[in-house]
Amino acid sequence: MTHRFTLNLGIRYDYFGHWGTYYNSHTPFPFFTLGSGSDFASQVASGAMSVRGGKNAYVTNNRPQGWGPRIGFAWDIFGDGKTSLRGGYGLFFNNVADGSWSFPARANPPNWANPSFSALSPTHPFTYVLGDSTGTVWPIPPGITFQTNAAGGIV
Image: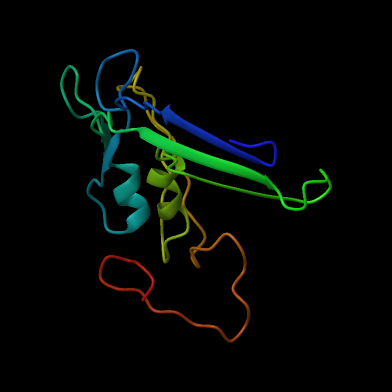
């Protein structure tokens, strides 16, 4: 624009596509169903994993609306090249992280199970580990209590 003011304009396109698996075109997240048993550990041990969905089934839809305009500027305030004011603005897009599906369940008291399952070998027995009875990764300070709702979430 001038020797003291610069304006930058731009546009970026982010495409994330569908979440699906490479091997069997099913949804990439296996679903766990508790089995029978008198306690939680028994129900987990007799539970079953399954990969749901048919060919070309996906967990998330395609996101073709990833156009993000950008604008930026730089201004040499006094014209001596020593002091400048810079700024910018843009719309940015990001994909949902894989952990967004599993991390919330890992610290949801009072109990949780973390089964390990391979979609490549659905008939292979899976392993699992039960969580801490407090349901937290870090110890709860003494004297602090919490309650859970019917779904097992913290109230």
